[in-house]
Image (cartoon, rainbow, N blue to C red; front, side, top):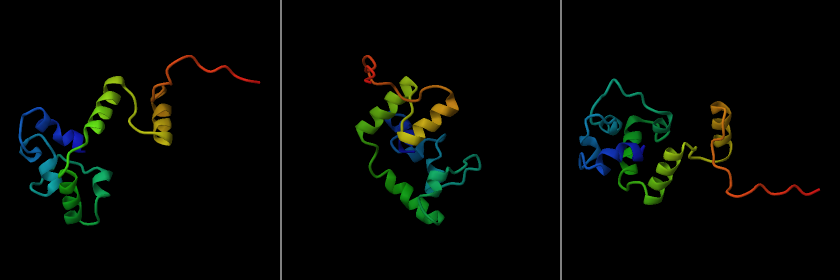
Length: 113
């Protein structure tokens, strides 16, 4: 959520994600009602009441994502890989009908008997 909502800030379009008119940020903070926004399950998991969710969402933005997190998101996006591990990546691979993670570099190991 932070990566997406902060894209207009990183691009220099606005200083605050709430100022970007095409963002859901204002809605998620409870500053405006946007009937086009469908709140994601991850957002609902932030709290039991709208006030708890809005506060938790606001706190997520007190610190933006770390540079390593931004780099990981960009790397996965540019290469078409899943950003996740284990059963999540396996589930995506099955649904997509292709590998969802890169293979280890180098030749495959020889099988030992």
